[in-house]
Length: 378
Image (cartoon, rainbow, N blue to C red):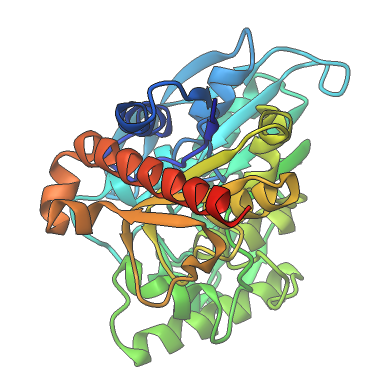
């Protein structure tokens, strides 16, 4: 009997990690009905992080609130309160940037005006409940504001040369002359889950790498924002070259300045759900995400799962919405692209569960072929 561990990330905006795992299992079972499946839906600090904690921690409670979203309008969201533990006697708050200031909340990109105010408001709400610890997932950001909106919602003031508040978002970065932290709320223990290792500035920084995804189109615009982030790092006393400081448009750096500690999101979630134990006696580990591309090797779920599987002696396999030419698919024994199976990206996006089932069947066929070849050689 083949033991298959299903540990995909969510496929952004189309299907949850849990539903993706179910679809992959259904597809595999259509080829290999005797297989045993272990479901371990994953996240890495981005979309689905709160859901992973909610599913894994008994007594987790949603705490509703309304915040200023990245589109400049109020949105209803929530943070997650975890029960008290010896390490966090007043409980832990899990706060997700994606559900407060995330790119999926935009109908159209706002490269200069989107910001992280909503994230800061959610953190403030959690502090109002007196929690001992904050766990902050910072994937899926809509902005490149260096976390200024978040810090402003927590009491900081970003001022221009005349002492007036600068505009919100990336638009105000190059005007910041000073930062007043006298009213900034003190931080409890803050654990920051991130899916990238990029620095704040430079060719691998927040503006250069992630800015275009958020609407920064020209080299001139990217250079302006990069310079503003560099100045912000200086004013906050943060090393712009620090690993992970460029996460979420520079929100990683802002959280470090507040007192947070950056941690690889995939590893933190994996520990919570007991992933290593589940993989220990697996034959196959299937992971996936919406787009497996050149950035997927920088701390995201697929590369992390491939390493875990290799350590356990299991075959890692990948199902992704698309697999780009710059992606390293050599980490996997087999891979399936939903776009290729569906014939077009729009078709794959419209019916992700259908094409994930097809991908599961393809991967099961690949496994059976590999097993047959192995038997023939031996």
